[in-house]
Length: 330
Image 1 (cartoon, helix red, strand yellow):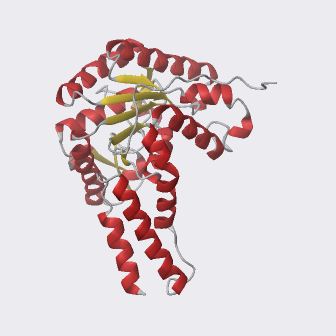
Image 2 (cartoon, rainbow, N blue to C red):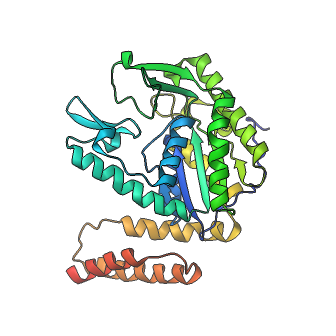
């Protein structure tokens, strides 16, 4: 007896392989999937502007990377002892304007280089609701807890989202004809919007993705992370304590479905080996001077060498250097 509704997901036309460079933009869910890609040794650049929730802010971030225009002190404001950017998540905020700008521009330059050679882009939209500065109408990526009186709240229409994204995709496709996009709608419920408003928001995002797929049928695809959460994982035991975010178990399950339908066969076959290497690289020994740890480092280098023979386009220069440094410290 089947006690839940299983979603039949066909193999995605947008496949991910180890030779691909992948960029991820969007909500917390983009962070979760991006970390799993990085943890499996994929070359992934995750949210260079920090977590972004609405389609307008994600589009602005990508446009800024295309232009390569750095931020200046004029783009910052000070509030409650910290300097912030309205284009960035609060993870970039700092007590020092110089430090804030340095973090922002270092990530921008790094991500701009990655975008110029990216093969895949994963976009995760969280909400169709935006906050705009009164007076200028500028959509902000994050309000940074500024008083509500400074903002106007609105819900983007399908047409507004498509009008932002259609020229953006076309511009990047002209530069990189082989670039492919995977869209998802975040399974995270934006409960502060209200129960009904959250549903309207998610529906708007789904319709916008569909419209973009119709315009770019070869370059774009959709992965049903939202549907997996709402149907296959329709139980509060799959939610975090706030009852809105997916639990770690839910994220892992959605990741496994992603691997199943979006990764090419060689990548799937190497995942376990890659994850073992990542765990070894992240390992912190109880006794770094022991003979057992010395053997562990040697074995890790051998694992990297074997993996690199199969995937020669991956660079482990820094990892090898770190391990060799640890060996000399013993």
